[in-house]
Amino acid sequence: MKVVLSGRGSRGDIYPIIAVSEALQKAGHTVEVAIPTVFGDEARNHGLDPYLYPEDSREMMKNLGSGMQSSKGALTFLTGSIHQQFDFLMEACRDADVLITHTSEMSAPTVAAYYHIPHYRLAYAPILPGRYPPPLFPLQNMPAFLNSLSWKSLQMISLYLLRRLLNDKRKSLGLPPVTSSVKYYTDHSTALLAYNSTLAPPCPQWKKKGFRYYFTGYCFNHEYGALDPALQRFIEEGPPPVYAGFGSVHLKNPEKFTGILEEAAAATGTRIVLATGWMGLMHTSPTENIFLTGETYHGTLFNKMAGVIHHGGSGTTHTAAKAGTPQFILPQLVDQYYWGNRVWKTGLGPKPLPPRRITVKYMKHVLETFKAGAYKGSALKMADKMKKENGVQKIVEIITTN
Image (tube, rainbow, N blue to C red; front, top):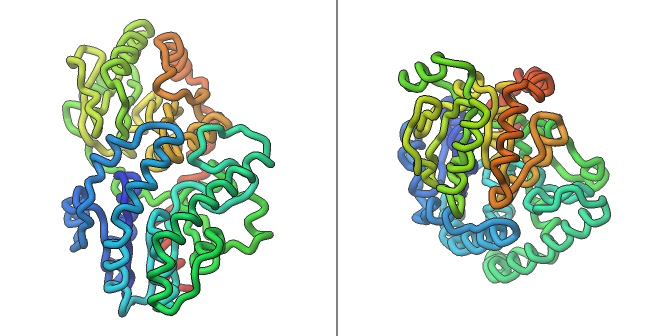
């Protein structure tokens, strides 16, 4: 079987695509995968020969901004290269049996419909409309009727973009025009919800509306391995540290955040593992209680931490949850608001707070609750529910048996 996969965005968007591609290839299937250039080496390290989109994911993440502005920036970025994506998919799917894409790939349902092949949308947060809040909205605790209105507003924006970008192409392919963004995706595609259904339960309306979806669990694959010896020594030299890092997300003022974290850590006697990430959380000098690290194996590391402070990406959220480690989320764009709220509501950590509102006082509160083990019981219960999940293998089973 030939499977075509495509995704764009940050590490959290692309690493699961790479993991699924690798698993399919090892299972004996022919795989053709397209990802941004910056992830080419990662894909090749896992035995893949990717087609590379030329867009700069690092620059995209740097310029996204925060709040609803970030959603607008993401749409601008994703629509800017839609023609290249369309050209790749049309060629790659000519003899394909299955198409799997990240949810950002707007042209994918059109290509799948033209070739009469199944299309699966790989999602790391709820993408099906209902009475739950859209994951990229900063306001996550609105009444259900306002959530429904929020989904409708998103659908109007999406429909405008789809009509503008795709209807001419669809006409040239002999396909009918897009008249509903919901039907465009749900009629032609099946959602692979690559997250834990306890951490993020389904909306009851989904089945009533006939949406096709599977819960697979998160696509863990590359999160485990040996830690740097110096990092391992730091961990063993004292009480469990707290991890802080923002992955591929950029803060407006990393120096200010680092200063707040350092002051709160000193006041509470907390040891910190500080990950530099794409944004450069390195505007400090290592001290006896602060260890600077680059990329490392989060699955291995988080098991050894007293808490995890992070941006709220689905991957980091699930990795900390699977480790049974409390977490605190500082959201500023797309689905980070959703995961911050779910972590709080499920008792895995303190109430989320955007980076611009963080203070030394609140950071001290977070560190003190981690040291006291306030959320550890709930975190361990969640970890127990996740220990048998294998999102990568589940996805392989779904697409090869349907």
